[in-house]
Structure formats: C-alpha cells, structure tokens
Image (cartoon, rainbow, N blue to C red; front, top):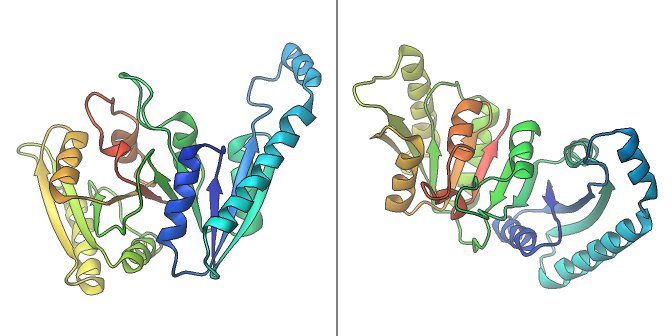
Length: 282
C-alpha cells in the first residue's frame, strides 16, 4: 500500500494534480490523503498580530474550508472508480510545512503530490514560495504537476545531473519505481561548459550511475552531455528535442536544484511550466 499526501487549496491546479496522481498510480493500491491547511498564523507574532488573531472569527474560516474538503472528497470518490484506491480528507490549521511534516509522520507518507499555479508575470519565478519550501524543506519525495498539464504516461524521463553527488540506493530505488511504473526510458543528461572536463569524483559517480542503469534498464537508458553556459537553456533544449514527459531531480544536490527551479525567469525558460517534475529525497 502506497500512502500519498495530496496538497489542495481547492483550486483547479490542485484538482489537476489529484487527477494526475490517480492515473499515474491506477495499478497500485494507494491511500490518498487530501490535505488542506488553513494558514491562520502565517504572519509575525507581535502584540498587534496577536490582537488581530484574537479578533478572527475562526468559524468563518474553518467551517467553509471543511465543507469544501468534504465536497472535494465526494467529488474524488465519485469521479475516480478504482477499487485499489482509498481517499481521506485531512484538515489542518497553522503553518503549512509543520502540517505537512506532521501528516508525513502520522500517516507514513511515501509521496507528496502538489500542483503549481505557474508564472503570474513576466518577471516572476516559475516555482512559488510554498512549492519551493515543500521541495527543499520537507524530506519526502514530491511530485509537482504544473498548471494545465494533462496526464500521459511518462515514456521519456529526463534525469539532469552534474555528477557532484553519489546516488544512494534509496534515490535509485525511487527512480527505478517510477520507471517500472511507467515502463519509460531514462535520459541522463549533464551540462558541460566549454573546455571543462569532469573531475575524478564526478567520473566515479557517473560510472556508478551508468553501471546501475545498464544492469537495471539495459535497453531503456541513454547518457547525454550538452555543452552550454546555461543549465536551464540546455535542459530546455533537451526537453523540447527529446519530447520529455517528466523530469527527475535529487534534492540533496541543492545548488543544482536551485539553479534549475528557482533562478529561472519566465521570459528565459518555460520547461518548468510544461513538464511534471519529481524531486527525490534521501
């Protein structure tokens, strides 16, 4: 049984993420926990803020959201007719990250699924603050579904890497699970600057990854090196040219992850808004 925590704010993006996860894991026995968090206290604690907090009529906030969560649960159960899946509504008040971590521990969560709203302006970053915090501060594998992405079985999976970290069995097991789930191909890609070779440590990590994939997926892996000054531009080109359906990244390599997800501006890069990405934690 796989336990999946789906974050919802009752938006169309959140509903799209639920649909994607349900279809992706349609052959697996799963418990889906639909989590909504009323972020009542997401501002600094000062005498003034405490006074404002005390004046809040919590019933006007909590009761409607609980009703919406109940409606969502009914919609999910009536829309997705799969006897392998069970759905539960979870309502929390407080800080988003604390609520997520609490439920991960209590419900033995294997995976977080969340939708993103995408860019809201020409100079906006693709990944919003909430999604970014979940990806970098919550140690649980997370599948992010961009706005408007319709489900299709991920046949082409990109695995960007700079070979600066050693991939543990836990990371490789998660990659293997996804590839076996989708029967897809993994395309390992490294972005190289002009006249810059891999270090001995990077070569060792590359060799280990190559050996593992050749043993596990002998006919479904390829390795690519792309020369470009920009990591994002290289991935953009790779995603478009190879018809990539999903990107897998590792959170342990935080600097590389931040280059890909958080430093990109809309007018320069767009693959984040078109392709689901799966962030793995050790």
